[in-house]
Length: 146
Image (cartoon, one colour):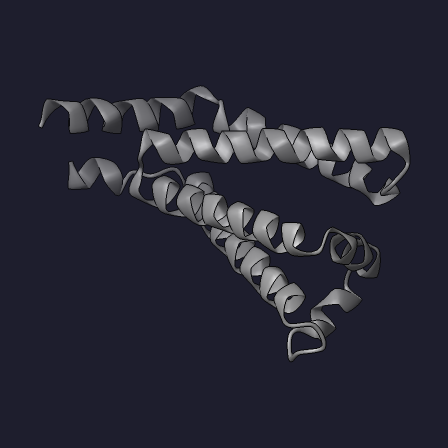
């Protein structure tokens, strides 16, 4: 089984790292909202519009970002270890992001969100590809056989 886990597709490794970075960003953003004007405040120079919107949500924004951070961390670990649940969480997160990008684009609230649409579609196509689904199916069957 160790040999099969080491046959992880390179893209799955990259996505695992991507979701790990996403969780770090979410937790950092939630900390910066929990402690305004702290040492993390400069991160909002990247997206002042987003900061403004999150500040209006108050404690809900901190909770939301923390939940997203937990799910990103779970996806990262699950993908890295080759667990089917990690694959499913990753797909769900990308779908949610895609829906958000489409809504933001259509409503005009965040015109730059249009850039995320083809990226999310490409990620979904990769995660749902035969090669990737076969990898997770193979490992799930191995785990069930133990």
